[in-house]
Length: 147
Image 1 (cartoon, one colour):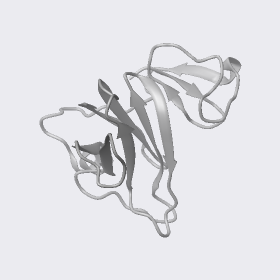
Image 2 (cartoon, rainbow, N blue to C red):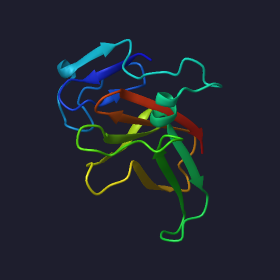
Image 3 (cartoon, rainbow, N blue to C red):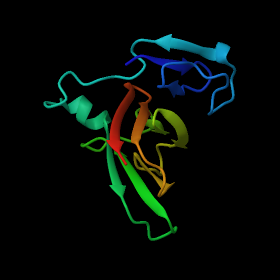
């Protein structure tokens, strides 16, 4: 998938254009480069291989939150098969987008964390949720779900 990638922090703009400033690290538009292979795609979405099963994010949406009023939760785990979180192979971060606009980044470290993250979205957050994870060995992978 084509994306505009920030050379400073790895953020990927998925809306078709580079932003004036990176929403993650605030680098200017000149820090972005267009990459045809910014996000890896499976060979056959209906017949995933083991590598794809370890990298494509799995999204679960809970319409009721027990922590915050007027909220629904988004839970993401990296991989149908749990991705490793080892010193030399791990998920660096998980980025969240709503309707192709960036909303959050969760940074992960390999020692104490699992390859997963959650967000508490306001009930009025509707549309397409896109999740992009970055593996330090195998690059960026994404999934989408409707909210």
